[in-house]
Image 1 (cartoon, rainbow, N blue to C red):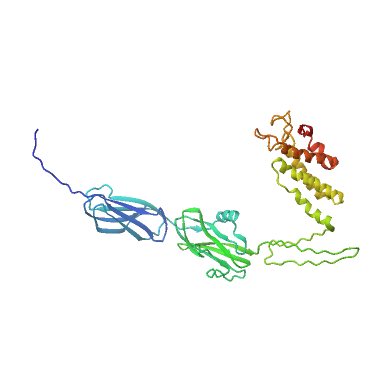
Image 2 (cartoon, rainbow, N blue to C red; image 1 turned 45 degrees about the vertical axis):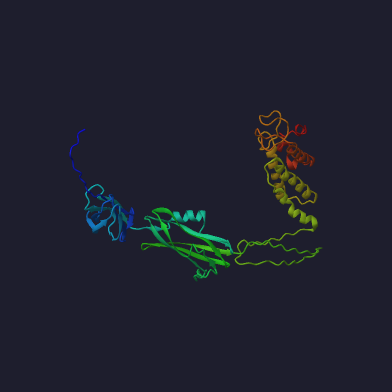
Length: 417
């Protein structure tokens, strides 16, 4: 073992890094905010100096200088510079530099920023899509919440001041602070600021507006930022809930003219108001007026398909017995019957009869919900169509129903097995 006399040498070196941050773009003629951060990467103390310059194609300008920045071990400090106000557009490079440490790596940092004229608009495209999806002209019930807003376009990020103003038809402003005419949700006051991006589909929105007074109103949404402004207008109609009021009046009519008076409910605004007079003679007449509603049943599985078909058959028979068939009634009941038979007719009907010579079903002659592999005929699914179609055949009016053509593929004997 050989031991050689040596010496212990301690090196005290410093290492500081700098970084710069700024928005990627900004408006000409406005102060730009830039931050510079210096960080001690070692545990020993250090003192450095820093500066920030802005350079474009034609010139370089010193924006900020700070000598004697003292940093303890691993410490950092951030400085905000908000006094730079470029007037010429174009691309600038923000260069941050430090001096005073021993390691040159990390002693400079650079970031580009594009200076341009600020643009804030509610474009024709913004208006078209907002109006198509949500609407600027709103109709709402009294005390029912609604929301108002618009899309807008900005070419730079930043805060935008938005204002909602509502007026009466004569232009008098509505007081939006006392919540008597329109109650605004506290989180969405009439004046609010929203953050906008360099984006075509920024939004300004007021949710949960509760109207408390009937009538027609106009409103305006105004957007302002960096000496630019734009606006969009719309209307609000506040109305009463629709009320169905029925008044019955009965009188005896012989051969003379008779005047009958009915009270009419009048409301303002009159949107959706409709007055309809229905005249009917006796109990049969009142029955006829409501009979057609039976045809509007749902349809899907066999019993739902055949229910409107049976109703169509009975409606036709009822009207016919009383000599009240019309072209409109004939068309209605024929359409309902045709739709039902199309569902049940093989081979293309949704619930087509499962006959033995078909490529679908079990060949039993019954009906099921659908024709897929899992659609197995049942007694009820088969009995009900069999009954309705039998009743249709018993109506003995082939010229009205055109039965031979409408159900030429249905084989009732097969369904009876």
